[in-house]
Image 1: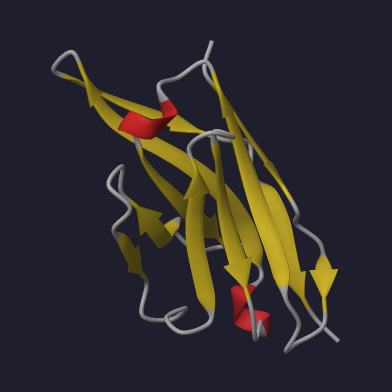
Image 2: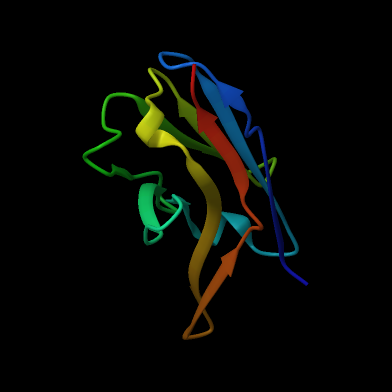
Length: 119
């Protein structure tokens, strides 16, 4: 069974930094596009950052210049470095894997990790 396990969420002051990690198991990690999504209370889940299997990255406008997504295929892990955090970054952050394997679109989610930005 495929697993995506997030870690690194915490309470941090505005202007601070956090690094989220998502460790994958039981999937062909290098073939998947990996993303970080977030969901704040009362809001829809939104894409924060995406890194394709080829290493191309894309970011939500709200985090451009502050967040950096990266991946280590050997460790089957995707990271989200979050700098200059703002209170509006407070949310549950979810790891996502999407890939087309044998002509089928496969999508997996992690359980989420809480990020709270507050003084």
